[in-house]
Length: 576
Image (cartoon, rainbow, N blue to C red; front, side, top):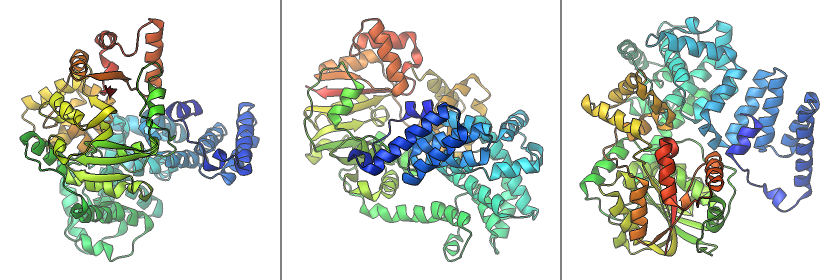
């Protein structure tokens, strides 16, 4: 994760001290600039001292952490560099979405990791033992690497080779604990981090019949008095909260790494269950498609996430839209406080981003799934809790509640409705005149491999059970549909179900969107992209003297480049 990649990913929020022009802020800024200069002049020892001084003055300076890691790597101080890279990710959790760059960094820090990944892939589906994958000294280096441990605890692994390595290690750890292998603190910490990873991805790693038999043996041992490592290995395969003896875990004292697993897999799950009675129900859910969608998300709340995004620059909604759409004409909202509906809020990750990004935003966040809403409520930090009201509702029934909003976000719901455009039309009844709406829809052209995979699944009569999803993922990797790994959703159970096994999915086209906007008197502001995509398409349209609000031109671009909207159409409109 070099400096260029980080700056491209995130524009950091100014610190409070800098905002008021305090002397401490000036000192931090000056020392940081000195550190940058020293780094560029290759005066590495001096640069290290300067970056460490920055962190003494401002411990949460993410860029200083990252740059310090880069300089330490240049001096081959890999372990120390890894700790600072991990710290920078902890400070800016959303950067874990750049998983390819993170994986590259981990390999640079621990080169033996790359060779082990190669061996695991070459032998697949055979699981290699630890000794076949690593020299023992190399394995010890891997199990104690700060960056790898942080990644395992904080985000689904989104790299097939690394997933297969971890899957092989999991089986080897299961065999070792059953054979009475020696336990040590670093092995226990690694096993617990991997258990947290398995819970985060909802046990999406492939499981062999042989492992299932071995796991049955382990369960028999756990019924007696489990060692910390036995408990951690069990949690690699099944969540602790589903076990009959789970209550006894809470009454014992465990090593800190095991306590973290119990907190994640037991206490937080129990906390969500207690929240079910606190979520208001605004509407009935009687539509058959809505009921089917609700059931899917009750079983698999989507998406599961770990850390709240941070260092988000707070701006008004008007300024946000102006930053995105520099040439679009729109009437500013002109409010310092505004009310926003998040239709289909899922597990609340997007809501926490909205309240940090949009100054003065007050959210009503609704979803069909009570399980998703409880996850969202638990994960929402207290600092944002008074700005987000979570409620269960069907958006088909929302007009009956008699509320209207200055803005509506429908970024993950319309394509799962029986009639997406009709549902969109109903939401417009809740939008005040000159209000803004953010809408996401699946592209027909951009999801051809998803469509092909769904057809492949249907032809084989696969139901969305955990075992089928695991098997399906592995089988697809042996076909041209391996391209699906471009989706982050491929790498966790609930997200893979959402991607490939959803009970209801519609896709659309730009011409159909254009017709809807015309019929419903909506002003198209533009399509939203990430920073790199935004720069790319602005350049394309400027060079060809096209308007970025010309949907016909966008249709031409997508027809020529079908992967333009391979994720979704993300568009903003204003009600005229």
